[in-house]
Length: 588
Image 1 (cartoon, rainbow, N blue to C red):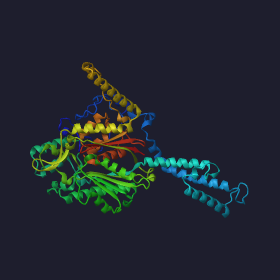
Image 2: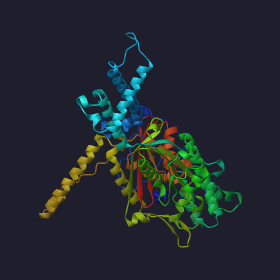
Image 3: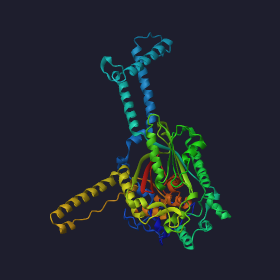
Image 4: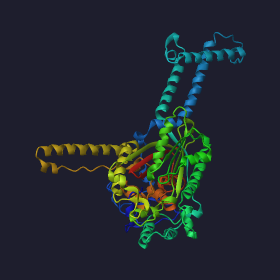
């Protein structure tokens, strides 16, 4: 499910970075110097954007945007919602204080005063009278909560200042009901034990030990590995790694379940611990694993292991490729928002099980999966409870999913059998074109929600001019003026700069060529794609969980573009079918 991958056998080679290497920010003097050709990148055939190859490498400080330019992108209900739990509780306290004050003022002429001037009388009579007065008001509100509180004049129950406070609280409650934000309380990724980690040479030796590949296929996979952007310490499952010790590879269902248990149990336990939740607190469980879907399901496996509640809503998604994690997040969001009054917690698990999916044939269209995919997984804890807003790490702003419906899109990432009956996932040569179109539609959809007006206005102007020119051209052709119509200027699409509205990018680490293509097409700088390249190098293509390894790198390791409160992070992933998914998170 990784676009551009058939470009990996081109002559362009990227020089891998060391695992522990981070890129230092450039000074102004260094930024002014011409760039040094330290890396060669594979070309992208996508026509989404065209950008110049030369120019100085920029620092993240070059993309500072005035706050006034970002006003149009602010979702004020999200802003208010962040502080709403505290404000609402304070408002309730103010309302109660105002009601008590009103009762005391009304009873001053009815209760005998025993205290001296300037003193407070806490006699039983005074306290009883105040409590009875407050009780009377609340009983009146319960009996007449629509008409009486809004009456004016002598028949009204509430004074003006109490009415105003009540109206403010009602408005705040209305905002909450119509916003219903989704918070990310915690997430974690799987860190494989050292016994799972292998180098490129060991991977090739594992392929040789399968005794099913020709010499040409071995050499082809070696070239793919060399240019893949993966590092020398990435994880393979123990059922396959054991062939390096003279044993046969174990690709059985039991070995596959064992891999799933080790990966999923580890990340679920860690995520719940970080979120300070008990397994029985989880209301919704969504697990996505594209190529391994046993019976009972992976959800049933987790529920049984952790003793989750019997009324938990669980969903097991398969066959959706590397873009499935954000689809799972979207599903969890929809389910949580059905619980807007009660609130709830959702656990999302994204992984891919490698054990049963090693291709044993020799068709080149299938061989890429053997060199790029690695073990990995991520667990994400979500909540829509007000009380969790203050302790959450991130808030979900937008999710967009675009699904292609053409026949070529459906078959560009396709599980099938080769001519010899060997099962695998085949990538077609149309994948670059399909991915480009799908991503363009996705960015067009999400653009108005994240771009400042300085980028949206040129886009709208470009679209309007193209429409006008098209109408004029059609009119001229209809009147026999084809030559004049051909002379009309061709207005190009304005490609917005997403760096003006997004601070960090998590691009699916589907391969070096995928990252290269999106970096070029979206005009990203090196520090924007650094998380994707480091995730690819350190962990390989971990399928749907790769965007969370990248988000973890941004959060804990990146120095070239430090994460700060208020920053926006965009995740972009591709999946079979063909689909492009994106999500935007706000750092709290």
